[in-house]
Length: 557
Image (cartoon, rainbow, N blue to C red; front, side, top):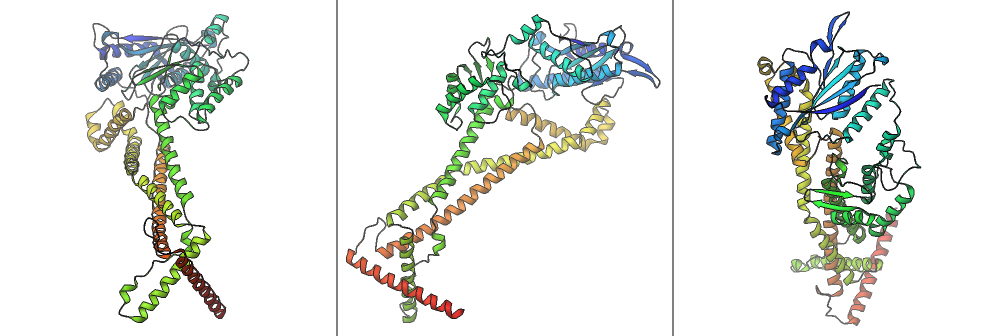
């Protein structure tokens, strides 16, 4: 079973950063230590995070690239640590001679360990040494991330445990079982567990392990009312926390960050808010846990939580608008109400004036019948019209949201374009890099390398702008784009429906004013007896029209 250890590499006082890195890479890739002889000839047991191509200037090229990343990091973040800065980390993975592992398999195990340990975010070089009785791997990885936005954080003991855990897991995959832990190691691994004192339930997955971080993740998901992959709480404690959340929020997430933090306090957490970050500590926990991506994950950062709450509020507001429209929508579209005709235009024509008068009487009769069928008073019409106009004004005030949707869609299209270019020209850039940045190769592929370089610069700016650790996938971008498009379509459909309803309500109001002889405020100038007589006349005309219509239909048959 292999054992591992990790140590930092600092700058040599007598050498530059690049020279220090070059020396350590040159040491582990020494031909005398990592060369084996096969039927096909000599073979060097060396690999990297990218497709490895051996060339004379390999150590120099790699050290130059790593040094360039460090300079970009210093320029971007403004952070420098001087001589105390950790340039890289050196991991040694040693195999027991009794296991009789072959060098090629040892290299495979080491490379998988390096990939898992760095998460694909840091460049590394690995070499398998066969110059001693026991085969062992040397892994050197750059402390600065590939995107030059952050550095690898090596917390003493915590990362050593993580390294050994990955080593055991990968070795078991190749049928090298990890040794049983001693009582001291077992006690050390369980000493940081949460206040629930879980010793009955046996976790079956990583997300079920009752660590401080897993419990906090699950509680945050519970407060935000979203599905959680973490199930670290005991049933009794989960019920207690759910009760606290339900009493304060019901089935909804918090309205803002302050309410979110207050619920955490009610549950039993202490809160420290120091500007950009928020740190929390449970009762019995030794240290505070900061809500940041490297500690808990991208979904549990302060920014992600604030964005989630803001998005929920926008959706809730939009739902209220749609509900207003649906609940206040009238059925007057089915009534086919007509507009009253201005008879003064036909004063010079007796026939046309008579025709217009008859049409107006029919329109008023239809208006009266519609109001009776829907049990509407004039005050009901004016109240609904006012509510619709208010809702319309609220919707029109959301133009800024629509503008933000459109801008985000344009940005997503730009991201897609650069992702395609990055994928399309990745192999060309790899050939340029592995060839030692040959100027002839660069001239031959100038257009492709230029587009690849533009994509990398765009991604650096995009990650910094949105405070992300990695770029979203094409699938995630498509889902977001389609969601924005659906939101815009819903908005315009709601706007169109609302304007149609307001137009019909205004027509109904005008007809009702003429029918009841009312002004804008609903005041009448006719007596009750006069209105009753007009109502009877209108009902009579309405009945006559229905009889005529029925006779006409029978004749058509």
